[in-house]
Length: 238
Image (cartoon, rainbow, N blue to C red; front, side, top):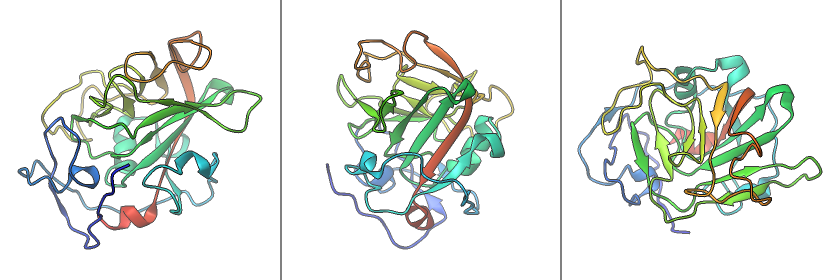
């Protein structure tokens, strides 16, 4: 894994790379491109009562290794709209998404090394991955990025977490826009994070049992909750 440098001086203006190539610094904020977005004032709020629902071994090979993790977004409390997701998760750095299907019967998620900034852009990386749990196991099964690093992550301002074009979409936007900043307060086409869909095999590996959806036999699922965990230390640097 490449090493990344983090600027220890918080700033309020963010440089966002519009190049669809691997970023040169953490989240590509040091790419030297023009300023496409001004970071809104941020209040760091966390759900301190939510425990991390996964083994920290899951993030041993990520930017979050050794960092304290806190829940910055809980859909059942903060709201299921993509607007609420971005209000809670933008500019928090790398994050782990955990989701539960209806009746909490199935737990799954993904790791985003780029985090979220409502850029309406996509990012190339080999470091993102999906994962899911079987009923009889405490350790998740990891589904790595395949088919090259291209378009591993999408950061739609009107959508929730998206891994690849179709690997995993939670709260997909109704009217996606690529290449321009729309902002999380866009009035139309807001995704609902209760809805998720998945097709594996093109951008992320198929399940261990060969099934082509993270949900198994179904390509879509209704979610009871979505949680996002980040590092307060990294979030405080921006």
